[in-house]
Image (tube, rainbow, N blue to C red; front, top):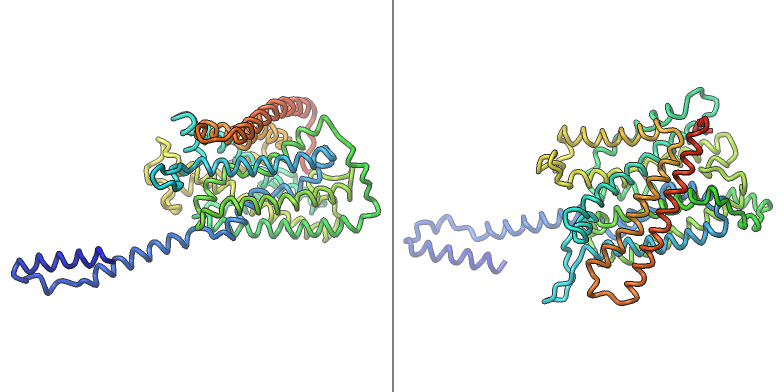
Length: 453
């Protein structure tokens, strides 16, 4: 305000030297109005940012979507080892997610304050390997998120088919029909809107959690703790893939943190989200498996008694799938629209109502649905892609980038932690990829049954 008053004073002096001819046109309040308008614009921009509460739900959405339905199946294949793996994956994923966000910042040597100098995971990749690292991250993110997003239409198709077993329709047809309901995602504008679908995601997951928990405790007399000793070496890698995919928040953290109103609370919010959701995942995994043991289905709600009860829960599971789809697909939109690809105009993505933007978004959604409906044994393909792209994004890229960017400022403890995560990631990547290839060869060498059976 002080500068504006001085500016007005200088103008008055100039007018006085000109004989006061323009003095009548002077309106010092005009500049004050301009500042008020600037403040209004700033406040509007802050309103578009997500609160800490909304950020908690967005992070939780990356963890508490599909996993709550399939973790009991992972425990069936891995027993005690699956539960231990779940905890280790949660801790490592939380660490690497915060590592990516740290790599977005550098410390100003003069002021000693942190300054955000990078905006995305791809920018961090470019800091690691200029020109190549960013493109590598973008391609890996796009591939992994597209395959992950395709799981949700497939899950909806299975849920509908199981809810209406007497209707003569194939699973791929149910998947295409359910896929139409994913189309409104193309009109998403910002992450604050996504936060509300995240709330619905976690709320739906909690309803399913409580339902399975209550039914599970009603089957308490069937529980046998010795069942945890069961371990399937042939299927455990796929179970490991489920657990790793359950905590794939790395492609989203730069977007989520960048949209926060109070960025200094990100680490606390991340820890709170991971801690809360991991506790719920462990509980649902243990109770769901003990209740059904060897009969545990790939989607736990399909173990519930047939009839209106299962239909009602499966409808809620379908809602969970719809809302879980929003965050990965919105991230895909954001990656492409901000990628500065040569084939896209410079202002592409500034308005979602442009025909070119609508066409691109509709094409991406349609591709994810068609993928799910067209490929038999799709989950095996997802396991293969996830074992390479997912592991790279989650456990290999973040510590590698961190080591390169902050090497001079790191303690030996940090170096050892990053190195341990990278080495473990490489071991899991190689073993998971080989196991997935072996499973794909076995599955596709035989007649493939309907995925809904």
